[in-house]
Length: 71
Image (cartoon, rainbow, N blue to C red; front, top):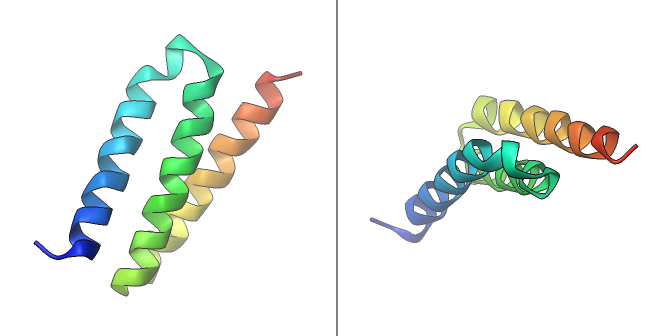
């Protein structure tokens, strides 16, 4: 496995963990947003730009959920 593949595996694993832990607190929502941003970076670095775009959208949605939960 090369470094890029390990990075992608870590990003997606972190997304799964944060998504599963979201009911425990809004910090996990922020973690999910960050993990989605990492997943997006992985997609673009790998050359799979559709994956990168979708993950960037998920990151924006999760960040919006985090910010709206603060109100």
